[in-house]
Structure formats: C-alpha cells, structure tokens
Image (tube, rainbow over all chains, first blue to last red; front, side):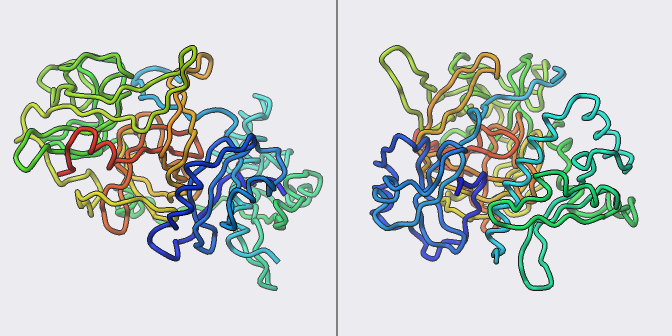
Length: 93
Length: 349
C-alpha cells in the first residue's frame, strides 16, 4: 500500500491527545520519515502523523514499532517544499 | 467494500493524479482543454473531458470515486485510460456522462451570501475603520500580504497588527519603523501601522540547521481610532480568544487573495516542515516545527500567495487557532498563533 496524498482526519474522540503520543511525535526519528506530527484517524482515534516519500510501501515496520501501538497515518510528502511568499500586484505570473 | 472515508481519501489521490496529468498535457492540448472547459465542448482525449469528480455510491452501498465527462463518447473511451479505469487505493472509479450545468438564475446567484462573502476583491480595497483579513503592504513597496488581526499588549497597552515576518519584515530585511499601508499604496495617507518587532526566520548555514516555530511580526497601529478591533472582514463570528487547534477541526480565514475560505486541519505539531522563501528556481529553505497543516474544502485551495498573515479561525467558535504563512495548491501551512502572541506578549482584540 502507498501513503495517501491528503489525509482527512475525523473528529477526535477525546479533546486532548494522549501525553505519550505527544512525546512520540516529538521524538520519532526514522530515516523514512520526513515530517512527524499528530492527527486523528478517519474514525477519530488520535494517531501519529508521518509524511514519507510518495513511492514507499507503508506501513513501515520500524515506524509502527516506534508508535507503541498508536495508529500511524502515512501521508505522501510533497514533491517540493511549500512556498512562503507575498503576492506581487501587477507582476505577471 | 470501500467506506466513505476511504473513498474520500482515494478521491484526493485521484484529483492529485488528475491535476498532474492535466498539468503535464502538451500546450496545444492544454489550450484545447481550457477552451473546452469554457465552452463546455467535448474533445477527443478522455482526460480533456473530465470536468467534475466526487464520491459516489452504487446501488449496493459501495462508495466509489465518481468522474463526470462532458460527453457520452468520452465515457466509452475512458476504459483505455489507466487513471479512469483502475481502482484508486482499492476504491473503484466510476465514469459517467454529465453535461455542463447552467445556473438557473445568475442574478439571484450573485445575491447569495456565499457569492458575496467569497469575493476576494472586497479584501483588496481601502477600508476605514480597518478590520482584520484585508490587504496590507509596505508603503511604496511591490508586494502585499494580509493583516491578520489586531493584538494588544496588556489591558490598555499599544495596539498592533499581527501578520507574518515575511509580510511585515520582508524576511528579516525591513528595519523597525517601516510604514505599512492598507491597501497596497504609495500614498502616505494610507499608512495604518509601522513595523514594531519580528521573530527572525533562521536559515541553514554551514554547520547549522536551525529550526523555526513561527513566521510572525507585529506593527504598531498609528491611529487606533481607525482600527476595527473585534472585526474580521466577511466573517460574522470572530471571537478574539485563542483556542488550541485539533485535527479534523473545520476552519476559516479571511485573506487578501482568496477572501473567505474554509478547510480542515489535517495535522498539528508537525515537525520538519520545509518552507521555501525563495523562488522555484532559487529556493531558500527554512525548516519549521510545531506547524499545522490544512486542506481546503471541496477540493478548493484554502489559500494562495497574498493570504500570508491571515489568522485562521475555528469556524464553530470564531476563535483564532493558527497563523497562515505558506502553502501550495493542495496544502496550507500555518504556525501556532498562541506561540506568536506569547513571543510578542500580546493577545488578540
């Protein structure tokens, strides 16, 4: 299975994420993982959020082990970094 | 059998692939596609005749990715195209003929609240008093961003504008005291604020890989009587009390370029987000932690260049949850507005 392009989280089942999940999201290091954060699954369970290269097969065993039983949502990383920039009125694109 | 959630995810993937294919079409074909989209006419390539996509449901209750074509002939030839005939992430793709629809009453359509509220032009003109969510730019400069909201230090301290570093400080370049106008103008009479403070954005250097948390700056308001505190242009419910973002939260924002849009928070506390402050040809990359990622509703972008600095609100409560600073066609990236307020010791008003 390949990672999804855009994950759509469900409404969280509890207001706050589990403290242990916060720690895992802050400390996960895996060579396949580009970004790491927190999301919820489609049905609202708190989950580890990781972005990985689009072509990679998921789930990744080492990431699943690091997640300590929390669900892991794999999203395909963007082809290039997002842009931060103002608009330039009058300049042609 | 695919669930609705699985079909939604497959739809996003399908749309991304579709855009990829259409963006890579040879220019003559792309021009033909643009013409057909305008004229509602059919062409020979099935990919050029896709005009709508969505999630559908079959009679047996199975959710599918639905693809609509301009003409019936294209439906027949869709089987020869892999994207239109192969299941996407295990979710079936159903192709159907749907002629271009015509609005019943164009005059009435223009009068609907949604059509009015979504008008970006309203966010690009002079407004006095000045609300949040409108165009702002350096006096006599050549770029614009969005005045996110007003913030105050203490209960009766000075009033500031909150936006991005890359809007108010031009990525660490502008000196404190730089004047800003609303709207974009070379007329000093349009000045509404002057740069007061910014959090420097740190870029990699040999031996250093710094991480950033916020792209934020404040500018002190020159005439507080001209500030419409507690107001966000075209957003009825704005409550200037900070709220923690959470995944799945429906959010809205008022921005200079796209006006009022809605979306959903995909993830929070995201580490390792790479953001390009340069151009595509000459990228200048900074890395951010604790970011918030957002996707626009109904396949529409949540933001575009010029919306930078918009304050993102929880749609249900109207409370600020994030500060918009980067994005592309599919993803908007925001930083923690609470961290920005804490950095400058201010609170929204």
